[in-house]
Length: 89
Image 1: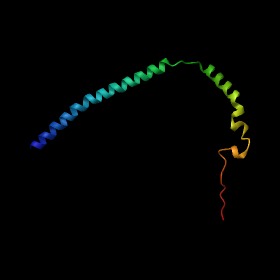
Image 2: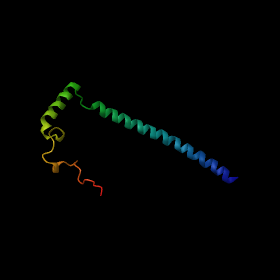
Image 3: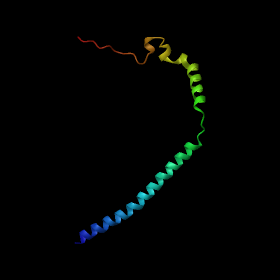
Image 4: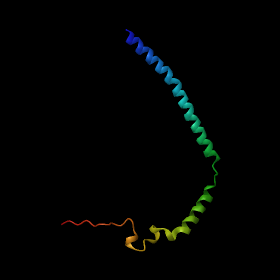
């Protein structure tokens, strides 16, 4: 009988302790969300048209370094080449 009463009291105590922890956790989570939203709101923004022009300018300036467009100067410089060919004997 004592064990049953002890189990009931223990479970009641644990559930009463968990509830404030859940609320505190929820409050902490909401604070983190608010902090993140404030950081995002303070971020400097530019128009999409300006960003597109900057991106186009960057691509044009670096197209000579783009291996997809100009290829590799030799097959050995290509890190994606097949290193060993498979042969069936």
